[in-house]
Length: 362
Image (cartoon, rainbow, N blue to C red; front, side):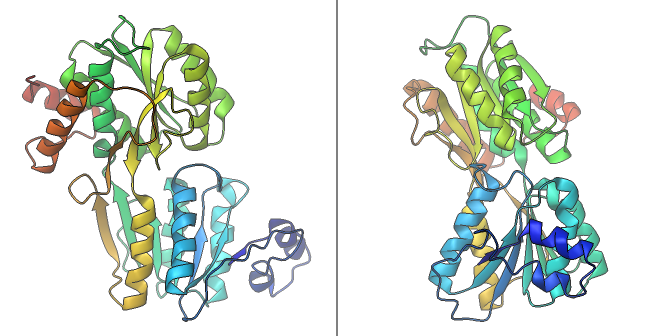
Protein backbone atom coordinates (compact mmCIF):
# COMPACT_ATOMS: atom_id res chain seq x y z
CA UNK A 1 0.00 0.00 0.00
CA UNK A 2 1.44 3.35 -1.03
CA UNK A 3 0.38 6.89 -0.35
CA UNK A 4 0.75 9.42 -3.15
CA UNK A 5 3.59 11.82 -2.29
CA UNK A 6 2.44 15.37 -3.01
CA UNK A 7 5.83 17.09 -2.61
CA UNK A 8 7.32 14.74 -5.14
CA UNK A 9 4.34 15.23 -7.40
CA UNK A 10 4.73 18.99 -7.51
CA UNK A 11 8.42 18.68 -8.33
CA UNK A 12 7.75 16.24 -11.12
CA UNK A 13 4.99 18.37 -12.59
CA UNK A 14 7.25 21.39 -12.54
CA UNK A 15 9.94 19.44 -14.39
CA UNK A 16 7.34 18.15 -16.89
CA UNK A 17 8.49 14.58 -16.42
CA UNK A 18 6.54 12.36 -18.77
CA UNK A 19 6.40 9.49 -16.28
CA UNK A 20 4.78 11.59 -13.57
CA UNK A 21 1.77 9.33 -13.13
CA UNK A 22 3.94 6.41 -12.11
CA UNK A 23 6.55 8.30 -10.14
CA UNK A 24 4.06 10.30 -8.15
CA UNK A 25 2.49 7.14 -6.80
CA UNK A 26 5.83 5.70 -5.83
CA UNK A 27 5.98 6.97 -2.25
CA UNK A 28 9.11 6.46 -0.20
CA UNK A 29 10.15 10.08 0.38
CA UNK A 30 10.13 11.48 3.88
CA UNK A 31 8.28 8.51 5.36
CA UNK A 32 5.14 9.05 3.28
CA UNK A 33 4.94 5.46 2.07
CA UNK A 34 3.05 3.11 4.39
CA UNK A 35 3.39 -0.65 4.27
CA UNK A 36 0.36 -2.78 5.04
CA UNK A 37 0.24 -6.22 6.58
CA UNK A 38 -1.48 -7.94 3.66
CA UNK A 39 0.00 -10.75 1.62
CA UNK A 40 -0.82 -9.22 -1.76
CA UNK A 41 -1.26 -12.80 -3.02
CA UNK A 42 -3.79 -11.99 -5.73
CA UNK A 43 -3.75 -9.57 -8.62
CA UNK A 44 -6.52 -7.21 -7.51
CA UNK A 45 -5.21 -3.66 -7.20
CA UNK A 46 -7.31 -0.74 -6.01
CA UNK A 47 -6.64 2.98 -5.70
CA UNK A 48 -8.47 5.01 -3.07
CA UNK A 49 -9.03 8.75 -3.47
CA UNK A 50 -9.97 10.36 -0.17
CA UNK A 51 -11.43 13.80 0.36
CA UNK A 52 -9.09 16.48 1.66
CA UNK A 53 -10.35 15.99 5.24
CA UNK A 54 -7.98 13.04 5.16
CA UNK A 55 -7.28 10.24 7.59
CA UNK A 56 -8.04 10.92 11.22
CA UNK A 57 -11.50 12.30 10.38
CA UNK A 58 -13.11 9.57 12.51
CA UNK A 59 -15.62 9.24 9.72
CA UNK A 60 -15.87 7.99 6.13
CA UNK A 61 -12.17 8.25 5.30
CA UNK A 62 -11.11 6.37 8.41
CA UNK A 63 -13.77 3.68 7.94
CA UNK A 64 -12.70 3.19 4.31
CA UNK A 65 -9.04 2.93 5.28
CA UNK A 66 -9.87 0.32 7.92
CA UNK A 67 -11.85 -1.65 5.34
CA UNK A 68 -8.96 -1.58 2.89
CA UNK A 69 -6.49 -2.73 5.52
CA UNK A 70 -8.85 -5.57 6.40
CA UNK A 71 -9.18 -6.51 2.73
CA UNK A 72 -5.41 -6.36 2.32
CA UNK A 73 -4.88 -8.71 5.24
CA UNK A 74 -7.79 -11.10 4.73
CA UNK A 75 -8.20 -11.12 0.96
CA UNK A 76 -4.65 -10.47 -0.19
CA UNK A 77 -5.45 -7.44 -2.34
CA UNK A 78 -3.15 -4.45 -2.74
CA UNK A 79 -4.12 -0.79 -2.65
CA UNK A 80 -2.67 2.68 -2.95
CA UNK A 81 -4.29 5.85 -1.67
CA UNK A 82 -4.04 9.60 -1.78
CA UNK A 83 -5.21 12.45 0.43
CA UNK A 84 -5.24 15.56 -1.80
CA UNK A 85 -4.25 18.74 0.07
CA UNK A 86 -7.46 20.49 -1.04
CA UNK A 87 -10.65 19.38 -2.73
CA UNK A 88 -9.50 21.25 -5.84
CA UNK A 89 -6.64 18.73 -6.16
CA UNK A 90 -8.85 15.64 -6.14
CA UNK A 91 -9.24 15.23 -9.89
CA UNK A 92 -5.52 15.65 -10.56
CA UNK A 93 -4.68 12.95 -8.01
CA UNK A 94 -7.32 10.57 -9.32
CA UNK A 95 -6.28 11.16 -12.93
CA UNK A 96 -2.81 9.79 -12.16
CA UNK A 97 -4.29 6.55 -10.94
CA UNK A 98 -6.55 6.27 -13.99
CA UNK A 99 -3.78 7.07 -16.46
CA UNK A 100 -1.47 4.60 -14.72
CA UNK A 101 -3.74 1.88 -16.11
CA UNK A 102 -2.86 -0.80 -13.55
CA UNK A 103 -5.77 -0.38 -11.13
CA UNK A 104 -8.78 -2.66 -11.31
CA UNK A 105 -10.97 -0.06 -9.65
CA UNK A 106 -10.68 3.49 -8.32
CA UNK A 107 -12.60 4.20 -5.10
CA UNK A 108 -13.77 7.78 -4.60
CA UNK A 109 -14.68 8.52 -0.99
CA UNK A 110 -17.08 11.22 0.23
CA UNK A 111 -19.27 13.72 -1.57
CA UNK A 112 -16.36 16.07 -2.35
CA UNK A 113 -14.78 13.51 -4.70
CA UNK A 114 -17.90 13.16 -6.83
CA UNK A 115 -17.12 15.73 -9.51
CA UNK A 116 -13.75 14.12 -10.18
CA UNK A 117 -15.39 10.70 -10.41
CA UNK A 118 -17.99 11.93 -12.90
CA UNK A 119 -15.47 13.69 -15.10
CA UNK A 120 -12.94 10.86 -15.20
CA UNK A 121 -15.53 8.11 -15.58
CA UNK A 122 -16.88 9.83 -18.67
CA UNK A 123 -13.37 10.35 -20.07
CA UNK A 124 -12.16 6.79 -19.30
CA UNK A 125 -15.18 4.51 -19.85
CA UNK A 126 -13.14 1.30 -19.48
CA UNK A 127 -11.93 2.13 -15.95
CA UNK A 128 -14.09 0.73 -13.16
CA UNK A 129 -14.87 3.22 -10.40
CA UNK A 130 -16.82 3.31 -7.16
CA UNK A 131 -18.16 6.50 -5.60
CA UNK A 132 -19.29 6.65 -2.01
CA UNK A 133 -21.29 8.82 -1.13
CA UNK A 134 -23.07 10.00 -4.22
CA UNK A 135 -25.45 9.36 -7.06
CA UNK A 136 -24.16 9.19 -10.64
CA UNK A 137 -25.49 6.98 -13.41
CA UNK A 138 -22.56 5.99 -15.64
CA UNK A 139 -21.86 2.53 -17.09
CA UNK A 140 -18.47 2.11 -15.39
CA UNK A 141 -19.36 3.45 -11.92
CA UNK A 142 -20.91 1.76 -8.91
CA UNK A 143 -22.48 4.76 -7.22
CA UNK A 144 -23.40 4.15 -3.59
CA UNK A 145 -25.48 6.80 -1.89
CA UNK A 146 -26.83 6.95 1.62
CA UNK A 147 -30.46 7.82 2.11
CA UNK A 148 -29.30 10.46 4.55
CA UNK A 149 -32.67 11.11 6.23
CA UNK A 150 -32.64 7.51 7.48
CA UNK A 151 -29.16 7.98 8.93
CA UNK A 152 -30.05 11.01 11.05
CA UNK A 153 -33.76 10.49 11.73
CA UNK A 154 -33.40 8.33 14.83
CA UNK A 155 -30.97 10.67 16.55
CA UNK A 156 -33.50 13.39 15.78
CA UNK A 157 -36.07 11.29 17.64
CA UNK A 158 -33.71 10.98 20.61
CA UNK A 159 -33.17 14.75 20.59
CA UNK A 160 -36.85 15.54 20.31
CA UNK A 161 -37.75 13.29 23.23
CA UNK A 162 -34.56 13.95 25.17
CA UNK A 163 -35.05 17.70 25.33
CA UNK A 164 -38.40 17.09 27.05
CA UNK A 165 -36.92 14.56 29.47
CA UNK A 166 -35.15 14.77 32.81
CA UNK A 167 -31.81 13.81 31.28
CA UNK A 168 -29.01 15.45 33.25
CA UNK A 169 -27.89 18.02 30.65
CA UNK A 170 -31.31 18.72 29.09
CA UNK A 171 -33.00 22.06 29.73
CA UNK A 172 -36.52 23.48 29.50
CA UNK A 173 -36.07 25.53 26.31
CA UNK A 174 -37.21 22.81 23.87
CA UNK A 175 -34.51 23.70 21.35
CA UNK A 176 -32.14 21.38 19.46
CA UNK A 177 -29.69 22.00 16.62
CA UNK A 178 -28.07 20.57 13.51
CA UNK A 179 -24.75 21.77 12.07
CA UNK A 180 -23.73 21.05 8.48
CA UNK A 181 -20.27 21.25 6.90
CA UNK A 182 -21.35 22.33 3.43
CA UNK A 183 -24.61 22.85 1.54
CA UNK A 184 -24.38 19.65 -0.49
CA UNK A 185 -27.76 18.12 -1.44
CA UNK A 186 -27.23 14.72 0.17
CA UNK A 187 -25.98 16.28 3.39
CA UNK A 188 -28.78 18.83 3.47
CA UNK A 189 -31.24 15.93 3.32
CA UNK A 190 -29.54 14.66 6.46
CA UNK A 191 -30.51 17.83 8.28
CA UNK A 192 -34.08 17.28 7.06
CA UNK A 193 -34.01 13.77 8.48
CA UNK A 194 -32.80 14.99 11.86
CA UNK A 195 -35.46 17.70 12.01
CA UNK A 196 -38.12 15.23 10.90
CA UNK A 197 -37.23 12.92 13.79
CA UNK A 198 -37.22 15.70 16.37
CA UNK A 199 -40.48 17.29 15.22
CA UNK A 200 -42.25 13.97 14.64
CA UNK A 201 -42.07 13.14 18.35
CA UNK A 202 -42.04 16.75 19.59
CA UNK A 203 -44.05 19.06 17.27
CA UNK A 204 -43.23 22.18 19.29
CA UNK A 205 -39.46 21.77 19.29
CA UNK A 206 -37.35 24.48 17.62
CA UNK A 207 -34.62 23.08 15.39
CA UNK A 208 -31.69 25.44 14.75
CA UNK A 209 -29.63 25.03 11.57
CA UNK A 210 -26.20 26.36 10.59
CA UNK A 211 -23.50 25.65 8.00
CA UNK A 212 -19.76 25.84 8.69
CA UNK A 213 -18.53 25.99 5.09
CA UNK A 214 -15.81 23.38 5.53
CA UNK A 215 -15.22 19.80 6.62
CA UNK A 216 -11.89 20.72 8.20
CA UNK A 217 -12.66 23.69 10.45
CA UNK A 218 -13.34 22.50 14.01
CA UNK A 219 -12.71 26.02 15.35
CA UNK A 220 -15.69 27.43 13.47
CA UNK A 221 -17.65 24.28 14.26
CA UNK A 222 -17.11 24.94 17.95
CA UNK A 223 -18.05 28.62 17.66
CA UNK A 224 -21.32 27.81 15.90
CA UNK A 225 -22.17 25.07 18.38
CA UNK A 226 -21.49 27.34 21.37
CA UNK A 227 -23.83 29.90 19.82
CA UNK A 228 -26.55 27.27 19.43
CA UNK A 229 -26.14 26.09 23.00
CA UNK A 230 -26.38 29.70 24.16
CA UNK A 231 -29.66 29.98 22.25
CA UNK A 232 -31.06 27.10 24.28
CA UNK A 233 -30.12 23.99 22.32
CA UNK A 234 -29.31 21.04 24.54
CA UNK A 235 -28.75 18.45 21.76
CA UNK A 236 -26.79 19.13 18.55
CA UNK A 237 -26.30 16.80 15.60
CA UNK A 238 -23.27 17.48 13.42
CA UNK A 239 -22.94 16.43 9.78
CA UNK A 240 -19.57 18.09 9.39
CA UNK A 241 -16.68 15.62 9.11
CA UNK A 242 -13.60 16.87 10.94
CA UNK A 243 -15.32 20.16 11.71
CA UNK A 244 -17.70 18.21 13.91
CA UNK A 245 -14.93 17.64 16.44
CA UNK A 246 -15.41 21.29 17.35
CA UNK A 247 -19.06 20.56 18.14
CA UNK A 248 -17.93 17.97 20.65
CA UNK A 249 -15.55 20.48 22.23
CA UNK A 250 -18.43 22.93 22.55
CA UNK A 251 -20.63 20.29 24.17
CA UNK A 252 -18.00 19.72 26.83
CA UNK A 253 -17.48 23.44 27.41
CA UNK A 254 -21.22 24.19 27.60
CA UNK A 255 -22.12 20.96 29.43
CA UNK A 256 -24.66 19.92 26.81
CA UNK A 257 -25.23 16.95 24.49
CA UNK A 258 -24.08 16.15 20.95
CA UNK A 259 -24.50 13.41 18.35
CA UNK A 260 -21.78 11.87 16.21
CA UNK A 261 -22.14 10.89 12.56
CA UNK A 262 -20.70 8.21 10.29
CA UNK A 263 -18.55 5.80 12.26
CA UNK A 264 -19.23 5.39 15.97
CA UNK A 265 -17.89 8.60 17.54
CA UNK A 266 -19.36 8.08 21.00
CA UNK A 267 -16.04 7.32 22.66
CA UNK A 268 -14.56 10.69 21.65
CA UNK A 269 -16.50 12.40 24.45
CA UNK A 270 -18.55 9.59 26.01
CA UNK A 271 -20.06 11.76 28.75
CA UNK A 272 -21.47 14.22 26.18
CA UNK A 273 -22.06 12.31 22.93
CA UNK A 274 -25.43 10.62 23.31
CA UNK A 275 -25.36 8.50 20.16
CA UNK A 276 -24.01 8.43 16.62
CA UNK A 277 -26.04 8.64 13.40
CA UNK A 278 -24.39 5.55 12.01
CA UNK A 279 -23.37 4.58 8.49
CA UNK A 280 -21.52 1.29 8.12
CA UNK A 281 -18.98 2.44 5.53
CA UNK A 282 -16.43 -0.18 6.54
CA UNK A 283 -18.73 -3.06 5.58
CA UNK A 284 -19.88 -1.32 2.40
CA UNK A 285 -16.31 -0.79 1.15
CA UNK A 286 -15.15 -4.27 2.16
CA UNK A 287 -18.06 -5.82 0.26
CA UNK A 288 -17.12 -3.80 -2.83
CA UNK A 289 -13.65 -5.34 -2.69
CA UNK A 290 -15.10 -8.84 -2.31
CA UNK A 291 -17.41 -8.26 -5.27
CA UNK A 292 -14.46 -7.24 -7.41
CA UNK A 293 -12.62 -10.38 -6.37
CA UNK A 294 -15.43 -12.85 -6.99
CA UNK A 295 -16.62 -11.26 -10.22
CA UNK A 296 -20.00 -10.07 -8.95
CA UNK A 297 -19.14 -6.36 -8.98
CA UNK A 298 -21.57 -4.32 -11.07
CA UNK A 299 -21.89 -0.67 -11.99
CA UNK A 300 -25.12 1.09 -11.19
CA UNK A 301 -26.92 2.94 -8.45
CA UNK A 302 -27.12 1.57 -4.91
CA UNK A 303 -28.84 3.22 -1.96
CA UNK A 304 -28.19 2.21 1.64
CA UNK A 305 -30.60 2.79 4.50
CA UNK A 306 -32.14 1.22 7.57
CA UNK A 307 -33.74 -1.70 5.74
CA UNK A 308 -30.44 -3.13 4.50
CA UNK A 309 -28.63 -2.31 7.76
CA UNK A 310 -26.48 0.41 6.25
CA UNK A 311 -27.72 3.23 8.47
CA UNK A 312 -29.19 3.73 11.92
CA UNK A 313 -27.88 4.79 15.29
CA UNK A 314 -25.68 3.43 18.04
CA UNK A 315 -25.23 4.28 21.72
CA UNK A 316 -22.32 1.87 22.15
CA UNK A 317 -19.41 3.55 23.91
CA UNK A 318 -21.49 6.41 25.31
CA UNK A 319 -21.78 6.94 29.06
CA UNK A 320 -24.92 9.07 28.65
CA UNK A 321 -27.96 7.47 30.24
CA UNK A 322 -30.93 7.63 27.89
CA UNK A 323 -34.24 6.82 29.62
CA UNK A 324 -35.54 3.36 28.75
CA UNK A 325 -38.81 4.77 27.45
CA UNK A 326 -36.93 6.86 24.87
CA UNK A 327 -34.95 3.86 23.62
CA UNK A 328 -38.18 1.84 23.39
CA UNK A 329 -39.80 4.63 21.37
CA UNK A 330 -36.79 4.89 19.05
CA UNK A 331 -36.80 1.15 18.37
CA UNK A 332 -40.53 1.14 17.64
CA UNK A 333 -40.14 4.08 15.24
CA UNK A 334 -37.14 2.42 13.59
CA UNK A 335 -39.25 -0.64 12.82
CA UNK A 336 -41.93 1.56 11.25
CA UNK A 337 -39.33 2.99 8.89
CA UNK A 338 -38.01 -0.48 8.00
CA UNK A 339 -41.56 -1.73 7.39
CA UNK A 340 -42.33 1.24 5.13
CA UNK A 341 -44.98 2.63 7.45
CA UNK A 342 -42.96 5.84 7.76
CA UNK A 343 -41.46 7.17 4.51
CA UNK A 344 -38.99 9.86 5.46
CA UNK A 345 -38.68 13.25 3.76
CA UNK A 346 -35.55 14.55 2.07
CA UNK A 347 -36.62 18.10 1.19
CA UNK A 348 -38.16 20.98 3.13
CA UNK A 349 -41.44 20.58 1.23
CA UNK A 350 -41.56 16.85 1.92
CA UNK A 351 -40.78 17.53 5.57
CA UNK A 352 -43.88 19.63 6.12
CA UNK A 353 -46.01 17.08 4.28
CA UNK A 354 -44.50 14.25 6.35
CA UNK A 355 -45.27 16.03 9.61
CA UNK A 356 -48.80 16.87 8.51
CA UNK A 357 -49.54 13.25 7.56
CA UNK A 358 -47.77 11.40 10.38
CA UNK A 359 -48.70 11.93 14.01
CA UNK A 360 -46.64 10.32 16.76
CA UNK A 361 -48.60 8.38 19.36
CA UNK A 362 -46.85 7.51 22.58
